[in-house]
Image (cartoon, helix red, strand yellow):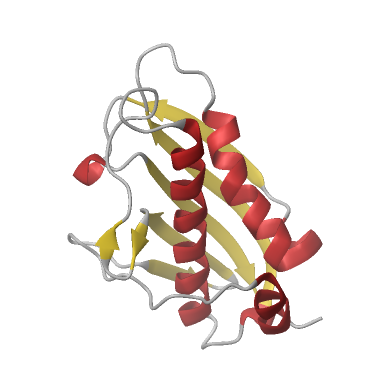
Length: 153
């Protein structure tokens, strides 16, 4: 099944990629690898979530934020693949960062939301290695930021 058809079956519209907010590019392609810069939970050009998980952001909201980050990663991948997501050979790695209170230990649960989306969209090609790291702050006070390494053909 094509990735576009799978996205349609899942009811997912890939958004327009978000432009960088500082001095970096949204992705770099080197050979068959694409390194996607950290994506934050943007929806329709605005931050959908702000705050710290375990304080002003619930685990459920953080999972929604992680899903948005993953969707924004897919948007960047689509540009890197000249609009053809079927060129994705493998989601190699996700790096997940969770802005959380001291003592919070559910980072893997939060980043699972992004991992689940990658598998839902890309099937076995979406299975990846991963980091799920807690931190005391993220840019613009977002609760989640995720980057990716992707192999494309």
